[in-house]
Amino acid sequence: MSRPQRIGPVPPSTPTGLSRARGVRHALPDDLLREASRRLSTIALLGAVLWIVGMGLGHLAYAWALGDPSALELRVPDAIAAVSVVLSLALFFYARRSDRDPRFILDLGLGYLVVTALALGNMFHWEPVTSHRAVEPMISWIGASCLMFAAIVPSTPGKTLIAGLLAASMNPLGMLIARARGTWDFGPTSNVLLMHYPDYILVGVAVVISVVVTRLGQQVIRAREMGSYRLGELLGKGGMGEVYKATHRMLARPAAIKLIRPEMLGESSAEAAKVAVTRFRREAEAAASLRCPHTVALYDFGVAEDQTLYFVMELLEGMDLETLIRQKGPLPAARVIYILRQVCESLEEAHRGGLVHRDIKPANIHLGRLGLSHDFVKVLDFGLVKSVVGKSMEHSIETGVGVAPGTPAYIAPEMALGEPVDGRADLYALGCVAYYLLTGRLVFEASTPIQMIARHLHDAPVPPSRRSELPVPAALDELVLACLAKKPEDRPPSAAAMARALAAIEEGGTWDEERAMLWWQVNQPEVARTASN
Image (cartoon, rainbow, N blue to C red; front, side, top):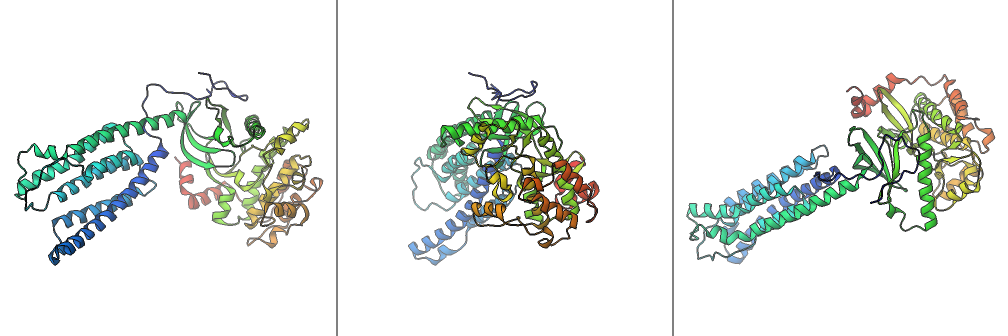
């Protein structure tokens, strides 16, 4: 078995590649458990509906077939069905809550299976037997339910066996209760097993299904072990890959892992696939070289045995700026300045190292908590980062085949035209971000990406103060418009210069850590609360 290969300079203390923990049994992954608990809630709701519909139609069918209105009268089985409806709805409402422990919910599901089997077994054998009923082997709804639960609501084989045996025993129990009530004399006691042994056979099949599902879950966990990290829930998807929450297996350090799986490149041409790999290498190597606290930290990166490209980065608490504005609307000028100065610090380090981000946008700027600091900015996704040191044709070829640089709503004119770019292209995009934060609107709006790019090339932007519902200081208005200049030489010369200009703006009030923490306590208490633990 070949070992995974690193594709960049990574600290040697962090193991890389796909690690397999042999001989260790794992539970199902958390995201699969949560999905199973959601399926259980659906089954519980369906069960409630079937109890209601089944009993109602049963009364109508007997009344019509026998021509006896007394068949519509309520009996003990109706009370059993009513209790089953209440229990089914209770499980449905309990399991649909996202904050519940999925393992506990699945255990409740096994209990629900047994209780449902008890109801079915008693209902099936409740009515008096007025004529001789042959005691013949049969498969009941209880056996079918055991199979369904094993396949749809997975559990460990041991729990499946215990719950299945208890459930399958409810029919024999119902027969014994019927004989004790004097409603059915079925002969020797052994007939309870003769009649319902097929259900016990189905329990064995259910255990086999549980074993298969458990092994598949273990395979998923092993496949998700990237280096020293174990993948958990899916955090998001993008054009180039997926991002998962992860945990370091020895340090218990939370992280986020971005994956670019081979199948995501399978339908592309060989040339496009090489471009994607090159882009991944560039993202990892560039991010690894940056040390600014406002740039997302990279822990590890490499290629797994199945050729999945991955890199491990710090797990952030909070939200990106696009989500923030979409949920809360425009921000006050003082807070916008507070945020932009931190972004400038990240960009200044990259620009001094000869790197241009080229995809600065609200979705790539994260705002949240770091340590005891709130409204702490992290610049994300250096996937389009480009070295401007020794400009070679190789770089423009890489970005020209299959991968379009930038985002139309935030693209600098020179980038749209395919001209050489430097750090001032990022400042143009940052001006677009500032505009969005102040107004809640894009600088230019258009129905297609081409029209959007055309407006960036030719149209003059409306000052943000004229489109904002909040006051915008004149100096900030001018600075944003300067960033949006069509020619790079008309923009601030550097991110550091822009940061100094932002710091010099005195109008619009102040925003500091105290105000930031108060905002997070009110609007995102789960993030603010973590800081005090």
